[in-house]
Image 1 (spheres, rainbow, N blue to C red):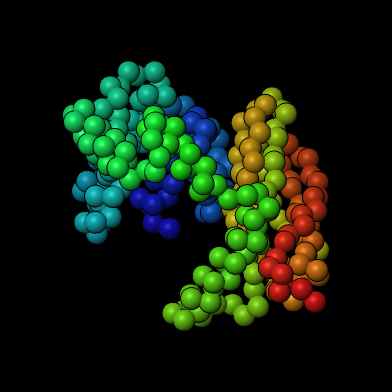
Image 2: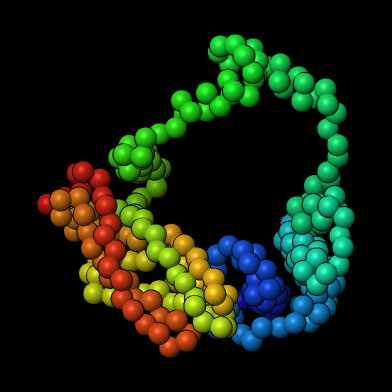
Length: 259
């Protein structure tokens, strides 16, 4: 990892310790995420210093533009988190790279007219739109079979273009991590005593004190390891407070994934 990339990672991870949800996922070296929390003033200064360095560094031009835009956004986030009042339009421009402008009311009236012509029935437009939306809902008991059918179809189509691991199924589960301590904790996830299974999702999560987080778990398992469409795996959860436990996850596979 080069110096610019490492500084950028440290900066993003550092700000993530002040702003919940800023870091959506991290798959890099755990040591970077475990560093001591820096002050917002230090992070803001590093944002500006790194941006100045990126402007003159020996980088591919497209990468320079991308990093500069990311650093503009991180600087704005650091300022707002520090208490600086940043106008909404400016915050959108610096964080997302788009200019915000007011939309004439006529544009909304035109959209309403098009909806009115497209939606069946009569009466209030909002009621008719909601009635149509309800028809798009999928019954809960149909979600999992539909998801498995979609996965099988996508896998078959993908196989026409690229080679996929033979006999592997990517299954999903969800777990809830809760930090009841008085300080931030890091949680490490590891599959144990689960032959043939491999964890594909992020193995490390950080949760602030007295907060909880529901996270998705993606696991690759051999198709033949399912019994009656189910497969049990064991996930060890170890946190920086010294606590450790093993949870049992029951993965559901397509109906054909059985023996």
